[in-house]
Amino acid sequence: MHPLLSRALSESAGTFGLVFFGCGAATSLAITGSPDAHVVTALCFGVVVTLMILIFGDHSGAHLNPAVTAGFILAQRMTLRDGAAYIAGQLAGALLAAYTLARVLSFFEGAPEGALEAAMTRPAVPQSVAFGLEALLTCVLMFVILRVATGSKERGAHAAFAIGATVFLCAAAFGPITGASMNPARSLGPAVALWLRDDLWIYVAAPVVGALAAVPLCKVLALGAEEPCCDPLDTPSEE
Image (cartoon, rainbow, N blue to C red; front, side):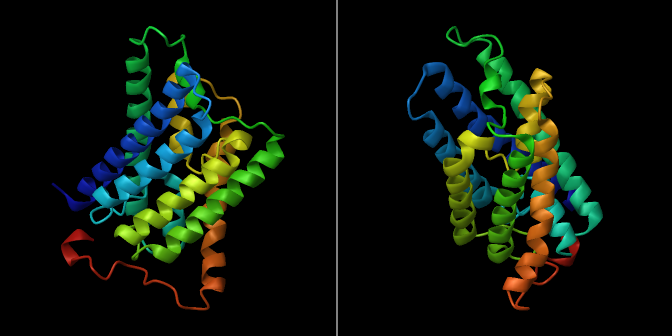
């Protein structure tokens, strides 16, 4: 198998896990009326991101997020060709996870029709505020990723826990306000599965803007001590 295809499939599998378990937690907790649904959902997203990085980080880098991949491309840590393959894999994984989750929920007697809607990201504030907040949260996430990643790869326990903790903190603090998506694939999956496009542009555009903004910010705050543009541990055959 071609190395790039293998890495793209890893991104697809990792994003599937992110959406299936993260959105699955959001829907199941909403269905059962859990009083701690928000915090538990945020924790589930943080934990699944940590696990996916530990599982796939050494291979593909476990971006799991088109905005993160776009940030790595701008930072010249990966090529546009590789980035396009990653994004295609991420979107495919998110869509497959959302449709799978919707199918699973259809067999649950306590689930109302369209139960997956509980996993959708919707703003509880004006669109301009939601856009700014989603961009800011993604900027924070991308900044952390750039500081702990090795080249274009989120690899190792310290990166996994730093990134997972950031996802949890952002989701726990601002989930009720915007959904704290920070990930176009995570929001696109349930929206496409239900064919509900309200406010979707916010969750596609704002994370990309935030991730791209983090790149020059990281260079400034790193005072020139930036990571190399390629992963020094990669072998030539993987490029």
